[in-house]
Image (tube, rainbow, N blue to C red):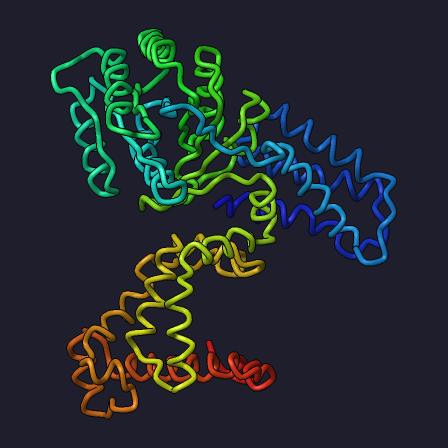
Length: 442
């Protein structure tokens, strides 16, 4: 996520390293590189220039605090300005109304239908809402079928009228159906086009007037940069939408849309898409995104994701097993499943301060645990519950059954043993011993 921009900003601020005082000369050198980094990220020239002017104004004349060096002070100023550039504050979704009507808009290929499903899943699982998805793309034959597949995947009902080519009528009928069937939220997936055109704008404007939605959201592909910003402006002129959704932020995005869109349309980014899975949706936090762009990680979001998967009852059972030396591979497998539910692995690693930058060129597959899971599934119930029972001949059988080598089985068992000891030490307060053990682990 924004790896190129992060690298260039880091190199730009590196210019100040070694200076004892922020001066006009070294600030000018640094901000020249910062502006270049923003332009390379496809940020509008005017916005990039105004951004660096504000940073320069705040930086000049400030004395370096005793606990900070010039580079760190400038990073803080840049971070604060990036936060403001992307909206300043987190803006939630409006769920008032009976039912709440959410109108999705955007160009074809922006990920609108998929994100409608993600939003439905988010509102169902995180907000305990009864959601109805509505298929109003009557022009693309596969669109309604795609929405039905998504709805089935997440367990959300999809309303569609086969043969009806009037999206306004379908929307109105869907809201009546939602009221009659106790649905809290109606998400209307509208038709997209390959480019902005008058017919498209008239149609979505008519739907908007007919259903009077609490939220009109503009879905934009973040990989399209300034084109996305220009399209957002065209839609906003017609719909006056409430917020923006940025999709495909897990791809090779330069960041121009995220950094420019608020300044151009003066509407907040409300959600971001960070992967292909239905759970790959995050509320947009401008301050956290600014920290990630500057390589500071995002520990708060990481902890929030972990808390969402935390099962208190399961944790108590694990504690008891650890205390009695009964922690086995079945328990280990459950822990892996919880980690996988937290989201895209590379995205999770990028939230850890310093680690994301160190691993930017390393491809972390979402199936990183596939080999481990295969080894554990090749074990017998006895072997999973009692790892000490696994001898040399059993290791050969496990390796053959999982399509791995005996060396990989040995490596997993060694890491499992180290982790079990470490978890027991944590329970017993053996901090120093645990730190010594961690030094020897990968």
